[in-house]
Amino acid sequence: MRIYPICPACLLNRAYMESRFVTDDEELIFKAVGVALKVLAEKYFTRSINAHIATEMHRKVYEVLGVEDPYKEVKEKANKVAMENLPIVKAFVENQPDTFRASAIASIIANTFDYGVMGHEVEDEDFLTFFIREFKKGLKIDDLDEIRELCKGKVCYLTDNCGEIVIDTLFMKEIKKICERLTVVVRGKPIISDATLEDALAVGVDKIADEILTNGEGAIGIIEEELPPETLERLESADVIIAKGMANYESLSDSRFKPIAFLLKAKCKPVAMDLGVEVGDMIAMLRR
Amino acid sequence: MRIYPICPACLLNRAYMESRFVTDDEELIFKAVGVALKVLAEKYFTRSINAHIATEMHRKVYEVLGVEDPYKEVKEKANKVAMENLPIVKAFVENQPDTFRASAIASIIANTFDYGVMGHEVEDEDFLTFFIREFKKGLKIDDLDEIRELCKGKVCYLTDNCGEIVIDTLFMKEIKKICERLTVVVRGKPIISDATLEDALAVGVDKIADEILTNGEGAIGIIEEELPPETLERLESADVIIAKGMANYESLSDSRFKPIAFLLKAKCKPVAMDLGVEVGDMIAMLRR
View 1 (spheres, each protein chain N blue to C red):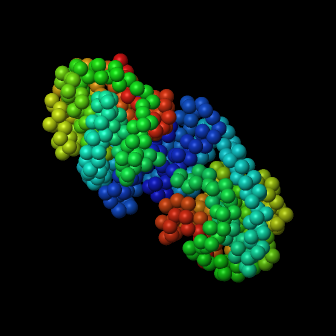
View 2 (cartoon, rainbow over the protein chains, first blue to last red):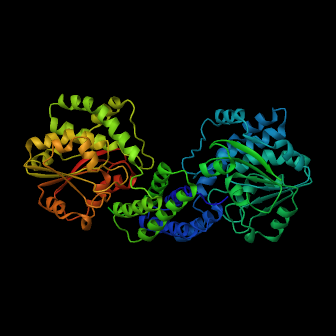
View 3 (cartoon, rainbow over the protein chains, first blue to last red):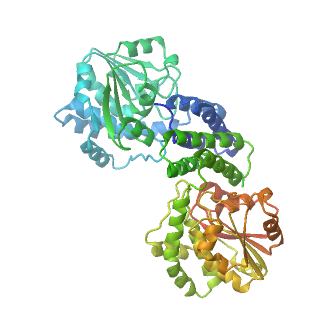
């Protein structure tokens, strides 16, 4: 998915927000937003993939701020809230007639744990009410039956945010029951609120997956040139790639990799438009 | 007031919004936002006055869009809503013990009629409830007594938005009762939702003021180099300049003109911070 005209304002807002997370030094914040603006102005007319432009922008902002992980606290909070709610979600999922389907939907609902998308509010209070309402709403695009079939082979699971990865473990367990091999790919370095190896280990992904790999340099989504050879091989040889969240969609929607199952909640207009759904809709869409 | 790090995101959002007002041509919108991004990236590090950067940005966006006034309908709607509510506001003001003060506050409340500031919502339903609540809240900075004294001389009244200018007429009438001369200055060309000569005439400012002048090329606020000689003279010779709204504040807060009475509602964080008040606060602040 290429950059849309409303993306730069949202990205700049995020650059400001993450600067504010780590400092009250107004001069430093001024510079950090300035470098973000510069990257956006340079890259906008190249019409590159939004997530790639965002990756470059955030890296430059982090450099100016002189911090490795401005979202450290935000991510810890997201994981904590999700861990607290995991038992109820688990009980709910286990109570459903089709646990594969229920856990997949739960993992899509958990994609809501995204701090930073403009206009998108995270509800971490009264989680169960929120969860059940979303669950009942169901999926706008639902290819879960086909996705389940493909999960009988080699699965490459691309995670997205912290918090979300906690609920992902329920779906990973269901995949693990039927798959030939489960590879989980996390970000190779801290970037926005996305899950890294540290998060994956903290929430016990290592006890479920056959292996945990990274996307290399911690791009938001996938930048093929940055992938470690092993990760690239897993993407190429997978019977299905499970791509969680908007950034993985943005960076893979026009890629050569297939088949890919995009599991996400459309949290902003550009992604919703690109998918042909409404903001707030959840999808499990298979691209063969 | 110089540009703040959160300004570019807001301005870009506005560039997008005004493009969307006039066209569904995605390619044209892409270009319009691109030119906005270019102006912002070029000007940000000059740390110029925010309203001046915004002026340049909007002019370039209009040029790309090929329209003279993307806010035409928005402005007409704002004037219409304000005209419908004028009789109640008038009755309310006339019922107050001090009509100068009451009409001044009414004109500040009317500064809420601003479509386009990010995160700022215009309430045009149940106007009276909204109006009375705001009126009771009162002013955070209140120099109205001193301002009244200065209004006994030559007054130069800089208007702001459409809609707002309708309610301004009540305050203008009060000034007219005591002043030596009332000059009203509107934008010389359409720019965002600001009032032009056409709007001033439509709402009857010509029946109140001694004269209506313009700011020349329609800057958002005042760009001194663009002022017609007569307008410049009035600003220089005024016993008090009444500057309505955020853009007039942004462009005059560090200027050589004085004394200036800034009458506005702080609708965004940067202006509120600059004034040392909270977002939502109303002020009538005299700078001698």
